[in-house]
Length: 102
Image 1: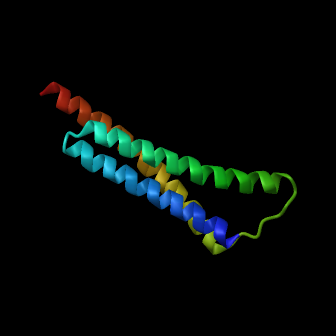
Image 2: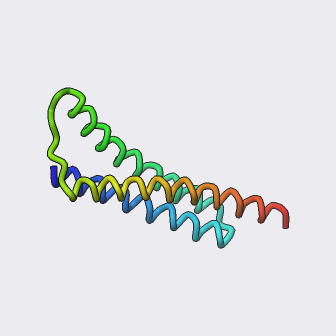
């Protein structure tokens, strides 16, 4: 279970980093690079979500999971990364619209 939690943390952290990188690119009006970084963020979130789904499916199948502080921490990382990705996507759209008006 510890390895599962660490893998969620790893993918969620990488997703957040890629999303922030995308925002930096967008501020520099490098929207192609921003889109590529955001695609990487989404891929990392899919990987983390897949791990999470496997945990949920296992529990739905009757296999009880021990919930540790580390797993709660991993879930927190994942939810924070998802929120960051969602907000940064909106910010990038605003930056693109602002750039198009110039």
